[in-house]
Length: 189
Image 1: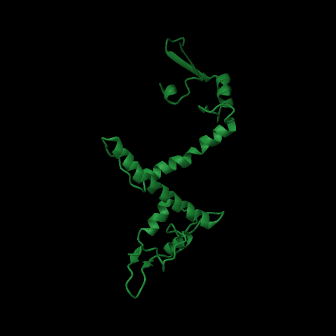
Image 2: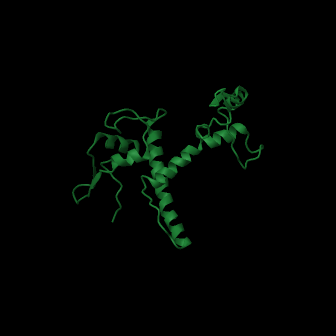
């Protein structure tokens, strides 16, 4: 049982005998041929795909597989920062309406992250996102976290609307996003 749970049953060989006094005696050893065969396959795994060899060779299939983490991260964003909770919908048109609302929100979320990273240049890291001031790649979640507390002072007849900034990192993020805090976009009414 222990060999099975520790996944060594395929290479562990055991023999139960009795000694001259009639007591049970257990002898065991590892099958070296089995160990060598398994060691030769270490790090290899099978990928099943619908792609034909003409569409993608083995290296391309592996690259596509390794790139799925980016897609999975976006699903995580869909459920995390966008706070999409599981709900029960009875009609297909409501499902379509929900997707119609959520997908553009995810797109804007991704575009904000992309804009900040592109504005940072090839290094794509910045400081100020964490309290210890370490340099990290900004994520959409961290960008929106820091921009969350921004406030807009409405304009009056004598002064235009202004974005009120309470942290330096907010000013830096707005600059990277190409937003002038002294001239926010405001609908003319």
